[in-house]
Image (tube, rainbow, N blue to C red; front, side, top):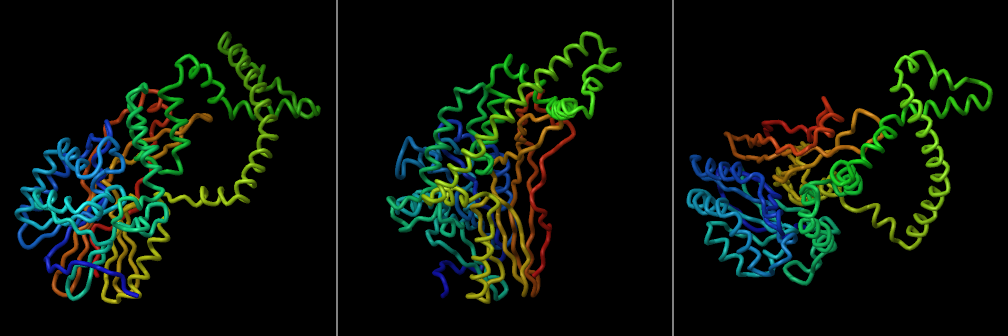
Length: 438
């Protein structure tokens, strides 16, 4: 069955972005990429020919804006992002700007007044779940992707009361974090929306250790965590000594350690204390592991644990790939399936001259980097992947260009964090060719 679509413009070239996510409570109103986005809009307006920019959903953070409701949400966002909206208005006089609805700005589909409000900035709000554009006798299919995600799909699209589970999670976690971020040692808590949902517990531990933990307590714990590997070796040697196989004093009391003087005495004391601490941690962890397994089994029987385990993540793209292939099967003329939502930019080439494109996000993305030493918490490094896709025809060919806009994040890592990951950088996103020809 072919799904309902809307729009069949004949623009000569199309530009695609999504998941801008500007707006929200407190410090979430700060937009890190205002300069880059305004420049991008200005450059589009200067291009020759017929141009259409399609923003494939989640332009605004309505879910993160809990102080106002209805159309007042857009008024609040415009007030904080005047430069972007004025550039929308100026560029919209030269190009067509189409805005789709995502899950985080789902209210756009619920209040007809938004159509006129955005039109005053030369933005065409398209309420369809999928829009189609034609190029060289073929079609481009564009969705945000929320309706494929069971945690963020509106069961009755356009109904303000048909809010999915994702809304309540965002309201509780993201909006709540933005309000309490001001009480932290730094404003790290507001960046919760930049973290892969699976890594939030680890991210919280990391920021507690490096930003919030009492300074004396942190430096007291660090030797035990840094020397964990040596401690494990020494503890194992102690067990061998107990069995009469190996003399642990070769490690604890050798000429090299004695030559260190007072530092050697401190090192022996730390290793001895660390062995004692980690031995008891190991002993206690055994019964705790069985308790954990029993709790997990109970939740599984109650159908709670599987739901938690299958929660959507930024890397869970298989359902979207399946969705794209279904669209291709039911609509043979479609050459490109474009979506956003997961914040994971990529391009997959399919047989018969087709592509699946994820437009990524313009939000800051925090990526985990493992420390070089010991068992210290990982460090979350800020990155950006500001990008857009351009699709146009060249003779009988369809060209897809991928462009990244350079942006260096404001680095707020402490000296300790920078030292622990010295020489290490986060992994780059999936490679995307600069030019793809269909």
